[in-house]
Amino acid sequence: MDIRTGMLDDPRVLALLHEHLRTLAPTAPAESRHALDLGGLQHPDITFWCMWDGKTLAGFGALRQLEPDHGEIKSMRTAATHLRRGVGSRMLRHLLDQAGARGYRRVSLETGSMAFFEPARQLYASFGFTPCPPFGDYRPDPNSVFMTKRIEGRIG
Picture 1: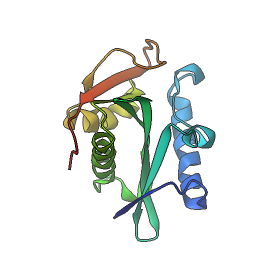
Picture 2: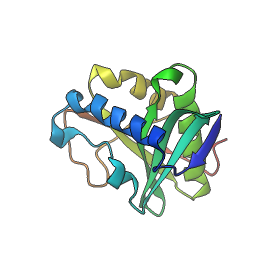
Picture 3: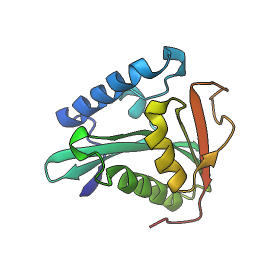
């Protein structure tokens, strides 16, 4: 599989992004949903990557710079056609590697607290992410789980 930057104008990427947002909408009240839409992903502090299996979109993920040494994992999604095939792990490894290459010393994320997000929380924990207080502009929210990981240099 091939990981490439950008491609937010590709109809396949836009379709998966719309599916991502539609799927997340019923999981929490609007004020507790922090998934980025197209405009959010185009912000200058965000870098967006797509994972391709040939010409088929397997998933995507983004990295946001919060501070010079602190990044945030955003908008990780695996296409339904590629679930349980290691796409999430490969994308997360890529994002952590990019964070290390940028000199980030810490990477954090926000995910949902509901059962729907349990597989995501398990994936993040398997990579060494641990619960933390809200960071950046986040505030305490019973619908959110905040996690962080210290990193040193390139991951893989």
